[in-house]
Length: 214
Image (cartoon, rainbow, N blue to C red; front, side, top):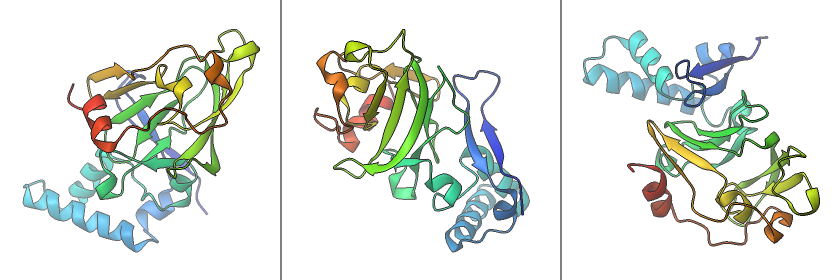
């Protein structure tokens, strides 16, 4: 048996860093065919670019994205939905396991896209329930003195990409570029949602235009 580890990407700036769970046993001896294929593909690409031997190629691939395949149980349990930028490659958005009060974020497994949840969120958990579009819901708890919910409520179940309350509170970044999602700030009467957002869901093209390249 092996202890699970956290693999952290990014420098000392905690805002731009992201963390992924890592199973040393499965990384060194991939039990999934897809994982082995990914490694072979990464090594072939690096070799074609003159990146050195298989060992250096594998290390380079690990440095750029999540070291575990998306089908691995430790990734699957944190998975929220497909990544709008890398869905064709199998990329997903997942809850950063190293998050904590005031520092919860949702990260991509195959790109530097990061969604920052409001600093007033003290607890975040991915639920097994899904919204109408197949996106797993998030159970959020706000600080009692900073809650945007009506009547001082602190708990809210929401869809990451389709919730009116979160829409004006989430900040996204891609590399050195960051912006706040458009929408209202305080929840008002919208804070009582049951997790399925009531606004229009953003298309993949709209998300790319919103969070990448601007």
